[in-house]
Image (cartoon, rainbow, N blue to C red; front, side, top):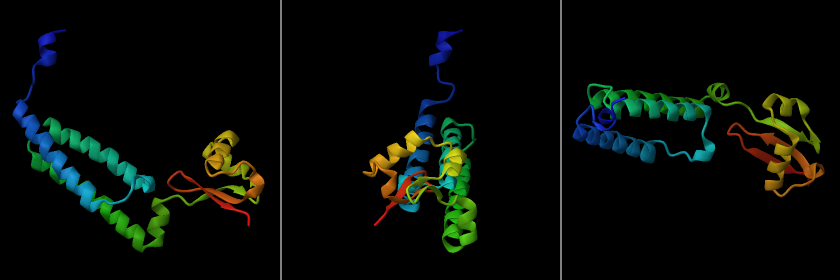
Length: 159
């Protein structure tokens, strides 16, 4: 192992600064003005988008592409697909159902829905912890509790 190789850049430092700056500002503009969802409402497609953007950005910043334009073109393609899927899901219920899982009942009329707990691998202790976060310590006051598509638990109390 040669220690000098660990600290010797294999690309010009100024090129790395320019690449990193260009990709940072491009993504900042996209996330600030185009993708205005809050983190709590991320869909599975949004999560996939974030992972792919991270990988594509890394390649663009590290110089695996010959030019920054190649990285921006790839990122633009990912952004376009993500935006198009959001628009289609908004306009067409079928697309929304394909992209987002439906809410699953965890509690109905004060009784646990064991099938859903098993399917989602949620323990009773985990569910009760979520219900306590909602100020509920007795299942009897719950008309329905659902696992939403974003992973949150929504609760409707008995009246």
